[in-house]
Length: 370
Image 1: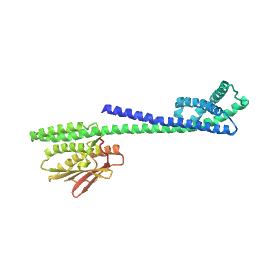
Image 2 (image 1 turned 120 degrees about the vertical axis):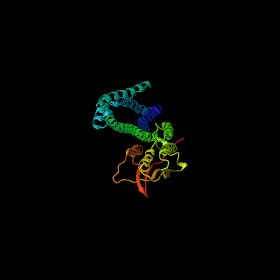
Image 3 (image 1 turned 180 degrees about the horizontal axis):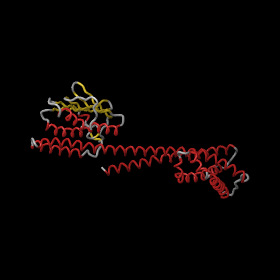
Image 4 (image 1 turned 45 degrees about the horizontal axis):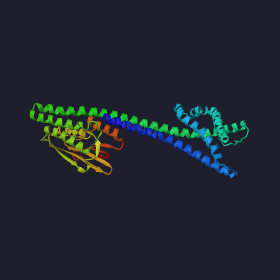
């Protein structure tokens, strides 16, 4: 089970990393499409004014794209230093914009150096206006460009951070839920075994043979329960088998005072439910009805499907609901486990009618996957 949890954690981590890379891929794709668009527009403008060398506008926009992409890669590699400021946009933008002077100089040198170099290789001259006005013009244009793309990058990074925080919150909630479920199971087992052992202890002084038979059946129950001890959800088939073993133990003590009826359709036996969910309800039926009633008690255990819900019910005669009653350990345990696993999509109700008390659980239908 530990290995399975480690494998599951590794799979979740891999899936998380894959999801985290999607915004990064989308950003670079958008960046590429932007410069493809810029090259297409430059070509159209160039041929409109009578240009004849297609490589010139490609070189102009390509050199700009090369220099800008270099700065984008640096930002993506070092930008994590400022990810802590995503909740404070002014500080985030401020930390990026402080590099604008260095970016302007390096961009200008790279772009115009590339253009002059390529023209020189082709035995041509790259002509442009005076250096000072061009540098001012390129710096203003670069500032607008940087502002636009920092806004885009801020949006992508904020979304990625939100997704990461959401995943961490889900993992934390799952860890807390697992810890709570472990605690609830730890409460359930001692409570159950205490009651069973009390039953056996009472018989040891009256009927040793029956007490020995009860111990053997308790051993069978323990062996069967071990198979589902580390599983939170088990098939209804397995839950019914454990209930039958428990009922056999209790019927040894109350053979002439209780009868059980199983109203479970075989086609529903593959439905999934929390392990040992019904055992505390059946235990309550024995405790509050069979033990306290001199008249024969009838207990009915039912399971049915209604639309997308699994309906579980334990009904017994011979008891009633006391005014202002409170849930015992078993019933309280059931409610908490159901709430942790299913949230608000589950209900557990106790009702009294026609001289019988019924505990009814409605939970979402889940099937066992082969």
